[in-house]
Length: 275
Image 1 (cartoon, one colour):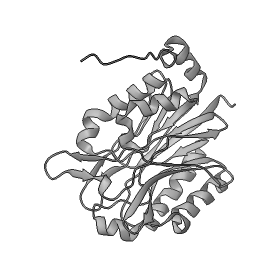
Image 2 (image 1 turned 30 degrees about the horizontal axis):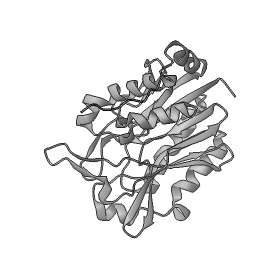
Image 3 (image 1 turned 30 degrees about the vertical axis):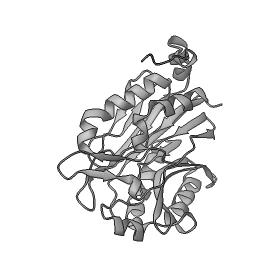
Image 4 (image 1 turned 90 degrees about the horizontal axis):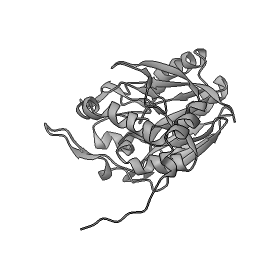
């Protein structure tokens, strides 16, 4: 297993047209590769974003016909890099969608798929009501991907609030966990850094969290502040609130060091709730 890699997070501001978003992503992938990135990670719904449900269904594609699948496959092969399409909106039936991550290997093949398990149903006030379960089916499988750097655990955005998923991935061998996101601005300001640093510390994993940023079709805004976090909880790189690229060198010895110093992943105990 290789012990070092350079990871890059691309922070994007997706619009409602798939082809336009892919056109803006292409030079970012090339730039990240020129920075030495071996693993390039994109945000949640990097294919398109819209607040209009009818437009969402009319724009979404099934996996076989989705142009982003071909785009990312070709990009991975041409750049000789691992690329995580943080998530694409995949039409599974006429009235259901999947929020699905795709990890592409340098040969262009799909190394792993992950469907977002936890759907964001929340009322943040001031007309900011989110009801992902109205359109998206929930995933039911945690996913680990085999890479030259060991196992990478795949999660998406709202999953970050469910610590048990991250503990499960780490105990199953994950060294790195990806958290592509489209975090809202209000919850981002309050929770983004704290939750992601906690997941790194609890698991002893590197956390790669690329985020959407800016205002999207329909007026909804996302927080940005993409993060790369060490197993100690140290922030290695952080983006601002506009599109861009962050990168950092990951030394996987830090995973072993963190888990050796505080071996909490080995200290589970059964307990009961006393009423």
